[in-house]
Length: 201
Ligand SMILES: Nc1nc2c(ncn2[C@@H]2O[C@H](COP(=O)(O)OP(=O)(O)OP(=O)(O)O)[C@@H](O)[C@H]2O)c(=O)[nH]1
Ligand SMILES: [Mg+2]
Image 1 (cartoon, helix red, strand yellow):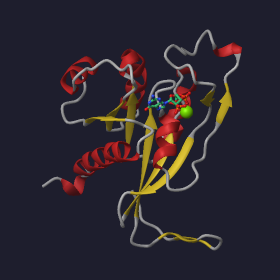
Image 2 (spheres, rainbow, N blue to C red; image 1 turned 135 degrees about the vertical axis):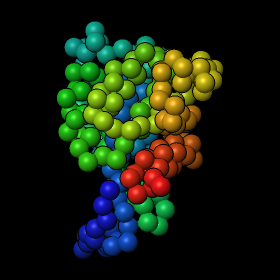
Image 3 (spheres, protein in one colour; image 1 turned 180 degrees about the vertical axis):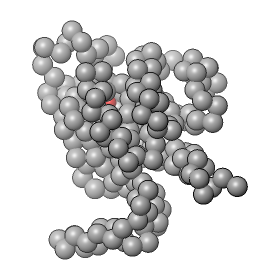
Image 4 (spheres, protein in one colour; image 1 turned 120 degrees about the horizontal axis):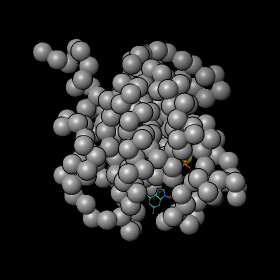
């Protein structure tokens, strides 16, 4: 976490001296809604690195329940938003497929924590990503991205199934919807701030 002053002559002051920036990794399995989430929340035009999916990936990328999916992230997404006057989030979205997992360690560098998106129609697909995030030493919250045919599991059922650390937040959101997605980020950042050394008595 750091504060700095950066000026962009073309667009005016981008980061004021009294703002604190926090880098957040947005992770999750293939097609869970990471790019959608960052597109919903970013207050700048998000950076996307999506490529059209070809027949070559149909054997490995599970498109069940994802009829509209034609592109996939191959490097990262990036978005920026101010949560309030003083706190700016830099959102780094990760690719979802296991073949891209080595990228996560680079994207996670300097991150305060991670938001792990989960699709409860394919819950087990989240476990490898959660494992990588834990291996990287990142504290995280779970954001359950809800689809119309998502099974109606309760938070307690999901926490038990995922063996979630007791203090890690779990929230429900719709990655296309700003209020619920913002709430997920607020819950994550509030949690991460409680873990900072200066906040312990
Ligand atoms: N119904 C519904 N559809 C969603 C939601 N979020 C994303 N989608 C759709 O689900 C598909 C996948 O979304 P993406 O944002 O591309 O997912 P991703 O996690 O970035 O995917 P990869 O980068 O390929 O891993 C898209 O067709 C979205 O329109 C949601 O909350 N509800
Ligand atoms: Mg994506």
